[in-house]
Length: 150
Image (cartoon, rainbow, N blue to C red):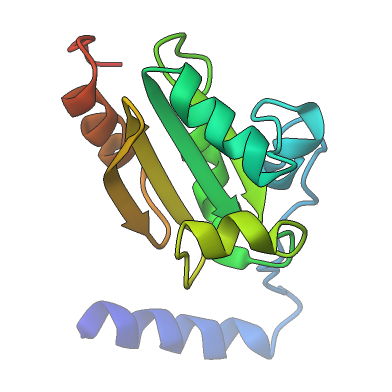
């Protein structure tokens, strides 16, 4: 409490002087911006229900990320997805809920971001909400033979 009081006192003291505080964030570079993940096709989007079924049947472990361009929590989850997408044991794909309502309804996704993990054609995990990278890695390590830490 004393630290907050001291900070507010200093803020009021300096707000009337020539020193100004700027709390603006720097602009995001396109190559480091979390929303640029999908434009670089790190996780190619699923375009149909047939494509979705093909992915979950043809790969031993699939991660399907349900998102939308306007979703703030989805943007926070993008770096976690980017961290696991280079792993050859995991197939990561994206579903835009606005463009693919058929897949969204088939998977019974009610809110975004949602991450579905399929192993041998069965849903083994359903993660709703923004997920930290370490949490996602722990969940995926549970379903792979790859037990190394990253």
